[in-house]
Length: 281
Image (tube, rainbow, N blue to C red; front, side, top):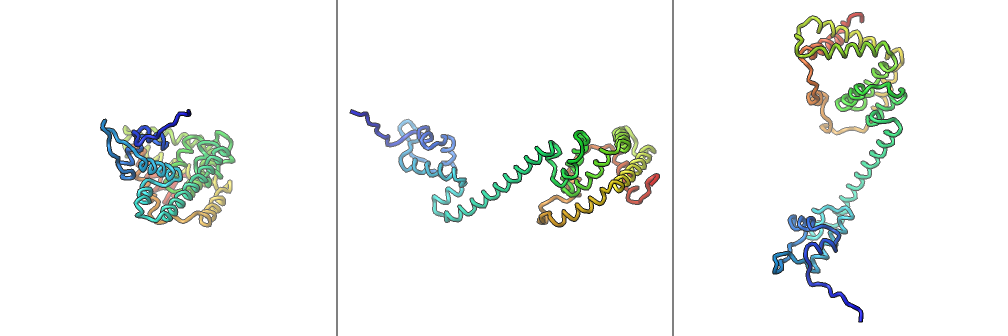
């Protein structure tokens, strides 16, 4: 005689989870959200799951594999919403996921082609810098581009890239930039904002900025910038109003911890640039 297995009338939660391909924790969650009615308990106080409970669990598993959310499952079981409506929204969600995956794959390809971390910036930025030799850009350059891209968008960072192209290809201007950076760092909290050296440093910053602009024009990078504006206007997708922080709001959220003297130096530099009063300009 062949042994015969008699199916039980009811099973414990562990056996129900094993058969349905889920976990006891998930089943308890289904009870909490009303997706699966709580069955009665046996003499030992534990829940016992019958045929109807198992059928519901199997359907839940199948719908989960199809990507249907728990709320939609509950609505489908309750017939409170047309299944076609659920599937339509699911299809939209999958399309959005596919678009995200496409963007992520493009980002990975760009990282491989351009290198990290430069490849993490927008293509509009990396396209302007990818011709530079390895090591020409400093980590601080990339940090600055990252912040600019966040505040002013890819176009703003792509325009700023002209400065770093010049610094990477003009050792004298790079050396002057390094000197000014060191002078900025020396403007700590011990320096009085009204110290004459603050005004002197602002004038030096202004003169250096003018030298950078001249080098940018001499290299024809200003023409490339004009083309960037044309490309951006033609290809950039429109953003609904309110989807991006304003530049002012973004600036107020980026911490730098500058001293009062350094802040005044920046303000004086901006005034000099706005008034074209740079020393030697």
